[in-house]
Image (cartoon, rainbow, N blue to C red; front, side, top):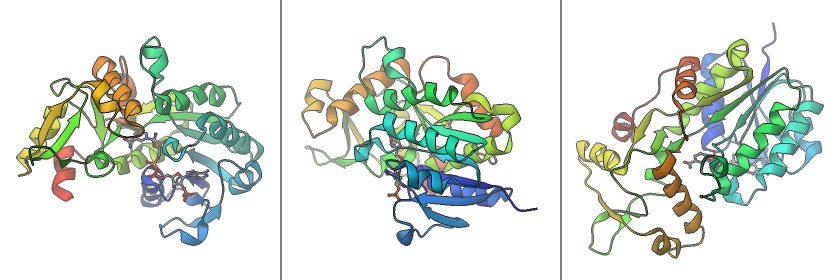
Length: 291
Ligand code: NAP
């Protein structure tokens, strides 16, 4: 029998790449990479098609004959995530998709009673309601955590004024508020969700969180692997003036400190993600070792 197809948005990026790889490794489904530039695609998906989250016609075409779709939007590229989420839901409905999986995040505005403003979390969460009411046979929400990869990428250690290598951030380094994982492991959860619609296709939330760490825990894990980093806590107002977009990061870290990344009572959603995953997750210690 022909394998059913899963269309994967963001297949050239951190989240989607792991999704494609886990689908291929499991082997039950075919993976279709959706990208704005198919000619540049160098991943392993069975098929690659053109699709744009701002263009309903191209996305509906990209979702044609797909059993399931995984959708992630990129806030950091300036996306209007509500508009793109809405368009993706419309395209998936028009294409007759059976299982819709949305990469979302906790609603910081709701959790904090409006105290913290973190649009790249709350904007994604606002799309959840649209997904719930769209009438898909199966729909599931996945919540990626803080990527281990941030620690060597976007938010990597930098040379400090005293010459040490480390971080200057507006967060109390003793507070365990950062849910974290190797972002490649999101694919294991998403593939598991497509394989188990009877368990999680009724709007379940799956939160990927291999560890809940404080910044000191992170420093200790690097230290155990022979890498010594410094940490300097600064007030949010000072940090916010460091670079464009720093205010958003400061608000996010303040939210982590007050409510943790995944918000209140995330244990059941974290456990469900673990149960449904096609493979075990990588610890921070092992990830540092391997990288
Ligand atoms: P990434 O590695 O930067 O890649 C971005 C992906 O988005 C690319 O594959 C790109 O595809 C695709 N894309 C962007 N605009 C598109 C459009 N208009 N149409 C179709 N595809 C589009 O991104 P990522 O890290 O996987 O995902 C980004 C999201 O993750 C952000 O919204 C961020 O808030 C969220 N997030 C990040 C973290 C973290 O710790 N870093 C944690 C949780 C959530 P093409 O260029 O190939 O078309």
